[in-house]
Image (tube, rainbow, N blue to C red):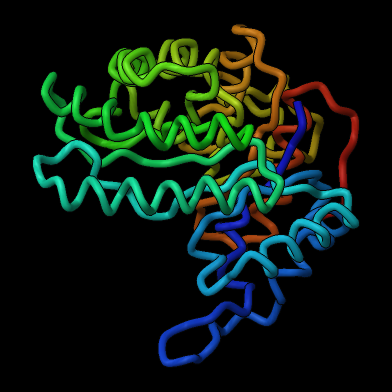
Length: 290
């Protein structure tokens, strides 16, 4: 599996446009993100989120793609940051969401991404399921013409349960509609492995979301110690070994995007997540912690 980075977790470090023309407190130019991801974090691809690209035009998106290509750290997935109201009864909301997603798919294409991901805001009912499928079809058709996969991210409501997600995929139809499974979302299911077994066969990218990593030791009671070399990391509150084994068991070998969501310094959190996941996917490559 290719370990990549969800760039949203580095948002505090980036100098991004803010309200009234002011920039955020971070100092890193987003154009430097691919080289930083490759050279400092040792990761070889990016998931971008749309909130990092506010104000971008065609030229700036193509410029980012060029910088990413030169750094050998391509953008693989564009994630729409806001859930889109596709299941409600308001036709005006549905039209606005459809137009937004058409722009997201176009941006993904300009960035060179293989996929775009969206969270679907919708109640869980048969009527809402039908509305969402109808409203996603034109987005799916545009994505197919641009060779971009359209991925459904997990969210409370219609897409909370794997079986409802797969029903939606069938109703939308097409070869390029799929899923974007997430480890944290899986951990909240009754059975995390079963959750991932059902969604991962449709995945183009899997989100390896992490929260807290602690030093592994050989003392009794430590979880998954055998999976790690001495001095590496054990993840809490859920077992990364369960998650990785679940996606591997259905033949997944695509990008695994590290998305650190914990309280520690983000660079340290991403680095520890990287080492823990390298150990679990069988890589012998380890890096010095920044």
